[in-house]
Length: 314
Image 1 (tube, rainbow, N blue to C red):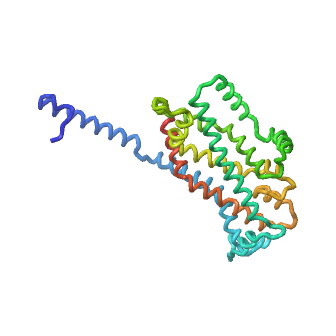
Image 2: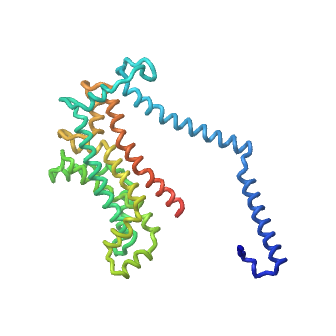
Image 3: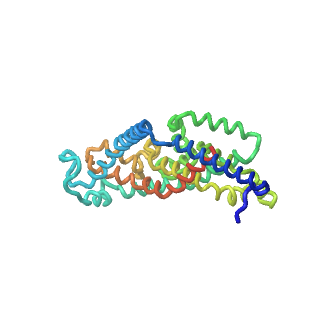
């Protein structure tokens, strides 16, 4: 027999209390129903909102869809007579992935992939360590360093590129992928505020319990804080890879005149060279979009978890 919080009352009072509670629940359900009832005005507003969102989605997606579909067409550049190709072929992509004296697309993709992967690993660890120090540790220069970082974030990155270039030239890092990796990884520390906001929500009792067990700061960070930071790690990793993959200005400045080139630099060169047609450039753009899309689907679950956790804690 089930028990209730009114069992201590006499039988008559108990039934009355249960009846009042049931009536309150029904009244609350009716209020909820009335509040969320779909009226004609609400339906029209919701329909208009979905129509606007659909139009915006079409505005952004149709050009990309056309670019992808047309890249498989047999027609070339000015000879395209229909919105979608009448026939399709993979020969153009086979030619793109077959290196020759002009086209070194596989090597350019490999260069970009190397820079993006090393930048992802180094910058993610760097950002997490800086964020942990600023969030969980207390030292004299903590607040001045945080203020300096915030002020530096107000300035666009390209303002420092000339100085960065001359420093790299002094150390012999121009024309190398190592120089790019160092600059990308060092510059990522300014984005520590995202991870710091996450670490600020972690309970201090976890760290204090670990200290009582004899753990040091490195053990606390590596074995307690880091496993809890998987969602934010995925966000930082995506930002790092995307920055290294899609950047044009710094690779163009650092790798100019070098045999080593990245995809974005070569896409710019494609647009200025007479020997490369628009079809080659179009297929290069389509192929260069594949890694970021794959990356998004790999980290989609972590990104969703991070968005939900931030929404709940906010």
